[in-house]
Image (tube, rainbow, N blue to C red; front, side):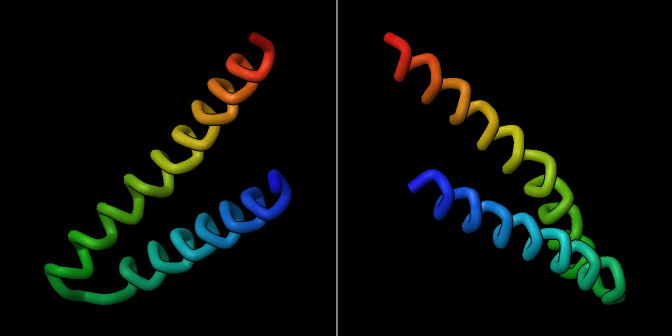
Length: 62
């Protein structure tokens, strides 16, 4: 189960990286807004996943 979730996370992050690149190359106001959202998610998603892993380990040990 963990391996499947890890693969899904890798695919999601790769999609975020690709979308960030695409939005950076497009010249429109909407693309700039989507670019900022993509950058935010690129930072927030790994932090959230790390926090979830820490909580899982803490609850598993109790």
